[in-house]
Length: 102
Image 1 (cartoon, rainbow, N blue to C red):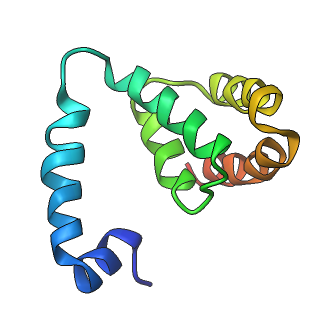
Image 2 (cartoon, rainbow, N blue to C red):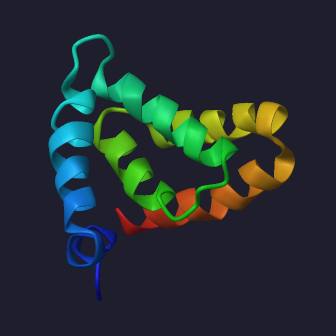
């Protein structure tokens, strides 16, 4: 199975390089926010924008960065009131699958 990262490397190697070097190598390493906070923000934004393809990886990263399953549930609930029920309802099964696979 091709992972999103390996697919990006094959199709758009410069994008893969920028993702590794700039996004995760620089932006995620900046001292202004903790990785935990960056994960919280990222999961909330991806939920609000209905970007479900990116969510499994970022929910895993959020758990690795110290967010609990309960906090991720709270993010989803909170976003429902600002971005709409369908966005949040669609993310709940994705989060459950990530939790079960860990």
